[in-house]
Length: 281
Image 1 (cartoon, rainbow, N blue to C red):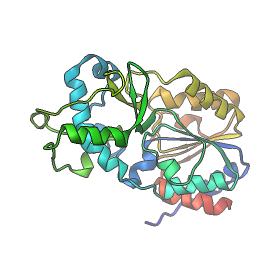
Image 2 (image 1 turned 30 degrees about the vertical axis):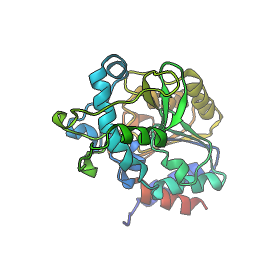
Image 3 (image 1 turned 60 degrees about the horizontal axis):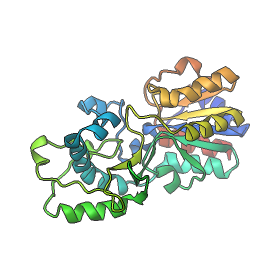
């Protein structure tokens, strides 16, 4: 894929990033080129009328919990096969070149790290981990997947990759969920949950504090692939604006903070960030 950027827009973005000490805030849009749909894009999850799991439903409703784990059992396998794309690699290159200092991601797919980035703050957690809501024990998703496979040896369904959602589950008809068995914590028998922040759940305070500290130290904030509709991520743009830290936004489609941006590009992330890395090398 080739991309022609307006020369002035790329020059302005490169000039800002070239100063260094850039904090990055990334959203689902940076992972769409890896085959993981976003929420609000033209082919995103919300366009398919997908309703994300909420913390309240997951913790209070056994049927909702079984529905999530059945759908996630299929979706996580596809998510785990996703590879980092040019956008992830370009962010890692900017970090290795000493220009990006901090990376905050709203994504739970681990693709920034797979693309070579280090010291990534996973604002909403990671699908690679599972936590017990009763005893707090953390285990790997691979371990849970083995246990779910053992408990559901005949649960196999063909899944359209286009139905995978950013939170790691897939759209699946209710009648296909019958008989799916959920497993509990090995240590205490408690309820297991992916170590991600569901809708309606609060991000841990210490993690939010780490993100605020990263923005505080930055000389600019680069937003990548986020519509900034949800306050969880938008608060860092608000923080940067309040502190007088310039904000640059690269996203396909409008964002809720476009009026705060010193530089704004509506363009695909992979080619744009590859061009940016080359222009600032």
